[in-house]
Image (cartoon, rainbow, N blue to C red):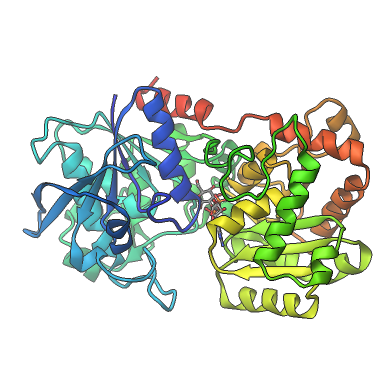
Amino acid sequence: MKLLFAASEAFPLIKTGGLGDVAHSLPNALSELGVDARIVLPAYRTVLGRLGTLRVLGWLTLASGHEVRILEASHPEFAAPLWLVDAPALFDRSGAPYTDADDNDWSDNPARFATFCEAAALLATDALSLGWRAEVVHANDWQTGLLPAFLSQETQPPRCLFTIHNLAYDCQFDFGTFQALSLPAHWWSVEYGEFYDRFSMLKAGLTFSDLITTVSPRYADEIRTPDFGYGYAAILEANANKLVGILNGIDDDLWNPHTDPYLKAHYQVNGKIRSAKHANRQALLEGLAASPAALAHDGPLIGSVGRLVYQKGIDLLLAVIPSLLADSDAQFVLIGAGEAKLEQQLSELAETYPDRVLSYIGYSEPLAHLLEAGSDIFVMPSRYEPSGLNQMYSLRYGTPPVVRATGGLADTIEDATPRGIAREEANGFVFEEATSAALQKALMRAIELHRKPKQWMKLIKIGMREDHSWRQSARIYLQHYRNE
Ligand code: ADP
Ligand code: GLC
């Protein structure tokens, strides 16, 4: 099975969120199943800086007459070779992959990702005569939405899957831009990419692909409803026969408390979990320059890592922290970056309660790992969550998650009712309403159970023993690649 896996980010080369994790760990899991994969990425400046020897595979001529260079590299973190679409005018710049220094979308995103997709389609069909032709192309999110569209122009196109990681993100443009990109005229139609008088790259991905997948079964159902559909519910409903939800997995080598190089103390399910977690907590707090009083505090540590955006319900959490501090002995550590207003609110809370609320505004892989290990409880009050990875990292690190019942959170977390614990099915705490009050109640339930060490340890161990690796989901993808 020859697979071209196309993504706009891949850990550890470039990552803004969970897509980066998936584009690293899913192709690796597929390689283990014998899939002959290539991963194609834009040659961002940051990515080129992180790769060693680059080999020039050749130059592709696009329909516009422009040429792009294709580079090949290998990297110890990837089982498959990496192919890079090198178009310096589009990708050789400082800043984030999709946004400029002011956090606005790059104004030439339509051209950047149309070029990426056209080049990827040519690579899939062996336009460079390398003797490698993809049987399946796997595209991910709006950045690759035009890839199935370009493939549709081939006489015998490879099968193309399009995965929705987050329906709320898209790139839409007007007719003038559509013309400037010289895209085939019939793509601008309700049947294909036209979306309320604009062109949607995401819609093109949905309509031109052979199969649409999304990253949890629950989210696959949710996005067919107006509340979660971001305008696409009707299109997804009409395409329900080619829409499936496949839960993400985690890389259990990278996220393994027994070997994780970022941890102060290692542990596993049958070892000294409590003392190791305590050592990691101290290291985490020291890493955040905590005061002696913060270091000495011994109430449950509630942690969170994530993008500070509406999706993640972080505003619900910030709103209840003061009353949780009054009603319990909990301490909080929050790591994240995102909307300026939320960053500021978080900083203000940390200033007001220096011994009980600690924050890191920014992106830190080491702190994210230490937080998973050093916290007692992990909180994810997402308004929607296509899959979510942190709740699965938390289970593996013995940090029961408190989550809202949505998307992949609902599909992975079972509420800690006494019956659920007795049956060894419960692994965290679940609440329904996206309100601060419901979140507060769930957090208080977690804090109360944490006071019962035996039951708490039982809950921790249920989660640590679960297998959330990619093995199972990678097999399901393979079946869909084979159209079984
Ligand atoms: P999303 O893709 O919506 O951001 P996921 O839960 O799927 O959510 O994945 C988020 C990934 O990004 C996780 O690996 C998480 O640890 C990481 N992450 C998010 N924010 C930060 C941060 N500020 N520092 C370190 N890692 C982060
Ligand atoms: C998205 C979603 C997240 C998911 C990730 C990887 O960014 O917000 O829930 O885990 O993609 O699929």
